[in-house]
Length: 500
Image (tube, rainbow, N blue to C red):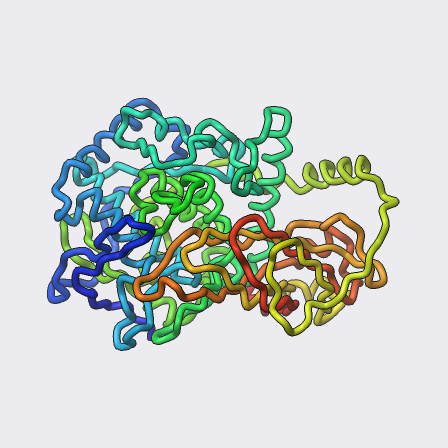
């Protein structure tokens, strides 16, 4: 079983591009107690950041100020709380019993439960500082049209919520999920189209993964296993606000870099929304456990609680938010009804582009890795064609891009499009976006020059219906680079068994 009862590498110093920080919290392993979920009747309700009233904003600001005024050695302090993310996300720990096998909670099924606990205790500590057990943190609802902007309460330069180490060009801009470094912000005339495209991506994130939780939450990671970096759709999506909010210049500190990300208070609003999206996904699945596997359910993490007590927290104890004493306000899921609007938008664009464009041949990927210096288009055979409705419910069709290598410490993004070939030929239209590979800048001690090998698995069952490609014996997969130096090892299509 995968028990993360970890030892500390004493006085571990992390260094990235001349900026140094100690990533290990001060604690004694002899004083760790098992976490017990609260049994009181209080149910805290988290609201969207843009809907907080003046009093709620002032309370939040006061709590953050109190946290920032604590000594840095206090486990409740803003500094120590921010450092926790560095501890678990940049190799401060080895796995227990496996020397030089680093602990990394990103790129696997540990991503969502670890962050749920992280912001849970951050919220509880703020409530303790405010002497208000009902206090709930806000979430940044970047999955809704009105929430696709940086919330105004984080932009007041005189507020403890402000962080100057952000991309100032995005302070009042609409977040475009398609952005890349140096791209202009959407104009007012473009905003409606960008919102529709954004919502379609959220729609795909849920509908293409509902029967295969690893596609949503990430691949498995067990004791002694070297991190495989198979992030799910939610984690890949979460990387976009990180990159969009953080500064665009190297080394992308604060939100743009894992080891400093939690120094920006907006990080916790962002991850509260990631947590909310997992909660929505669980509801859509009837709260069926995503992985009935002790390697996941009994995985555990160590945190300081609201009483300065170190507690060992198991995944199985955080699967229902109400059991932790909090919930989210009910908001309309704008992505649910976006498909028809998106199709109308796409039809209009294709008419304006013209249909009589020349077709070109496209070949298979081959066995040799390829640098993603420009768009790569490959023909990929499907394992089964003309699948029935029952077969689609039983197995999800998945495009797998594997052997992905990118420079350690680099911020990386590329997009994956799917198109229907015509007798081995394809036009210039890339087709439909299946998803994006997104990695926020991070690195590990003693591993600074090691390349990371990753994989992305994208469900395309519904997408094939949208492009009328179910009868095709192959698909055209296009890999479009956005930023970062990337090499691709291969592309294939698999069938993943559904668990519902």
